[in-house]
Image 1 (cartoon, rainbow, N blue to C red):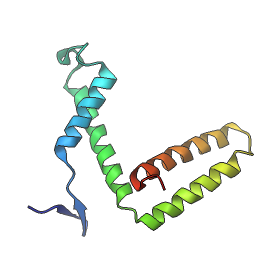
Image 2: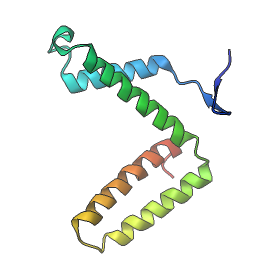
Image 3: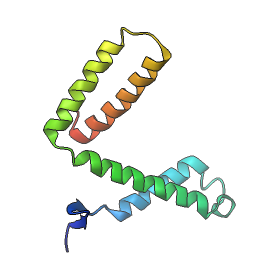
Image 4: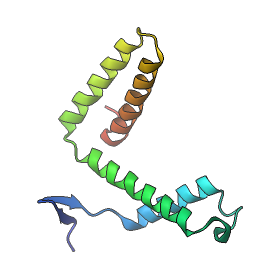
Length: 115
């Protein structure tokens, strides 16, 4: 059994479909308070949304894991430097930018082992 699937000339590792389905159910339960509210009352469309979101998360995790370690470390360093420098600037725009940098930083560190 092959561990990769050919995609646009490159090889993409297979994503664990069972893990994606478990994540979809977790998103569904958290968002729609299932089983307190019956599945019949919520509907398949809502589960379909949760499943799409789980696939998006899986593809994003794969994309970040595919970034070479050196490039990821450089980006982490650049984000940390930008956050430190931006802390001296006041304003709503900079606060939003810093928040976005922190989200990206947490994502990169989670995949890269916290460098």
